[in-house]
Length: 393
Image (cartoon, rainbow, N blue to C red; front, side, top):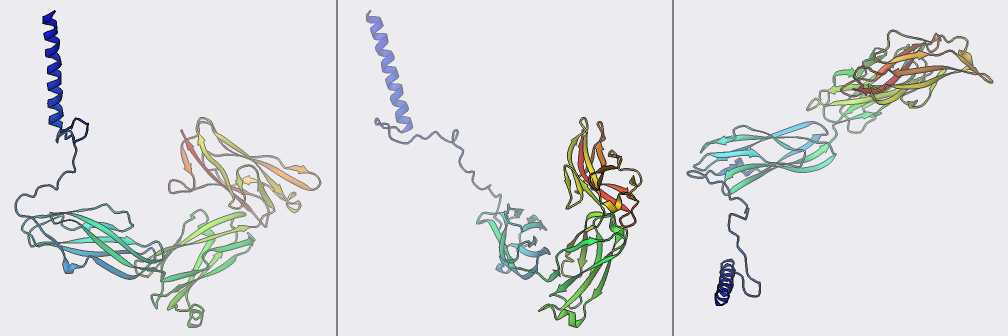
């Protein structure tokens, strides 16, 4: 029995002494206060700057110029400026791009490693999107122990060096048998010799019906815009024969202004027709049938109707013009008389099951599909239906 008591006391004393040593080592007081230092093996402190072997470099921006003011710059025109950083230290200077949250970027560091006595260009590129004054920065990181980050600033004011009036050309209720013309004016506040370097129509499928004539403004015409130094007149003519229904086009123009800016002039309108398209997923304002995303295994179908005015009912003779763009299938039904004097023709546009993968969403990957119908009507010989869809496997 005495042996058991002795063993128990020994275990108790051992635990007590061990706990006391641990408390002492950790710096705890009996009341539980004090600091616990777990040591570097358990803590992840912020790493110190990397050690530089040999003598340190020293980065200096030439002329002490940390900011460059562009003055007035045109909206959307790319700008750039070269800062020069010199190494006046005795070690190799290492530079790299820092993260930036603004629209300006350090586009290029000519020499990321600069020897003692050397220098390098740091190019900052920037394009203004919002009108008004601006001031942005772009950081450059260095291994200079006294200057680990250099913030370079650009400033200025974004202005418009030209103006287009109107900003959109709209043709309303034009006839397919006659031409129609609209005029736009471009005023320049930056140059006395504004010129259009090139132009193109983005909608290739209907570009053949559009003609653009460009002429210089006279001195009297320039007086209509205060501050204008020169200008051009754009005369857009739609030729006869454009398919009936809504249409949209865009003119892309490039000028001889700083940065050769390119603008887009939207064009929209409607060619009159005695035929009206109606049905689900049909957008009459744009003349587009919206089929959306179609699974190849399911296919898709839209049932439309062509409503005919009374004057067209005895003359209409619908048929497809040329082959339909695959995989679309178009079915034209028979004319149906509706009391008291209306009539309609069913029109089914279908993506069959098992169709191949295509993209006709009207974006960079694929243009809108077009269905062109000959009507047999002298005043509106063709009817266009655009179809927006994509087929996925």
